[in-house]
Amino acid sequence: MVLPGESRSWMRLEWCHIEGCPKLHTLFPAHEHEFFESIRIFFASDLPMAYCIWVRSICHHSSSFEGLQYIYLHNCPPLVFILPISSFTLPHLESIQIAHCSNLQHIFPLNDECPQEIASKVTFKKLKHIKLYHLHKLEQICDTRLITASALETISLRDCWGLRRLPAVSLEGPKPVVDCEKDWWDRLDWDGSEASHEPSLFKTCHSVYYRKTLPRVSILR
Image (cartoon, rainbow, N blue to C red; front, side, top):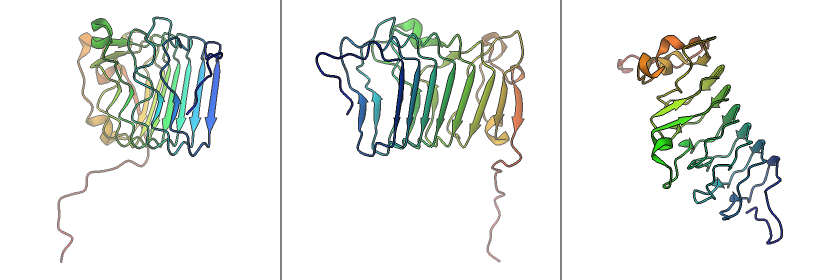
């Protein structure tokens, strides 16, 4: 567990890189006066026992994580979620890259105290890049039906078969490029043009190899 002493604070933390800590369980436990308003980059890799980065009861303030721009996670199998959202909406987040976190279900779950306006719609104003690989249990990027990301440029996904929805995007400007398996793309759920959420608003690029549905035939002769 990473825990500051009584005389220390994470208030000025701007960059966090944690790698290869086999006994680490929780990175940042709850603290009523920690807003993490200065953190810009978070990187974590090879944490085989880490089930939590920021706990669900983390302090909720409008300035919390307002400077966070980049999230990178690799090979943290026990993680179920990354950062709970309540009264803050990550206004400067630009890039999310996560791979080989086999238990991850939600990147940004909603806290129980989340206001209704956020619970119904979460907007990531500056999010440009999403890269998600081998997240077998991922269900949602954010635990809300509608996510908007008007600045989105690229989405790259592999082996995230449980994910059914992409963020809504801008009706104007270049279309975001989605690099993914064709089978996955064909099964996505959409809200339609009125919500800026339909396939025609994206440009797809399917990998040469993708999983195909096998015919239902007997292998017995």
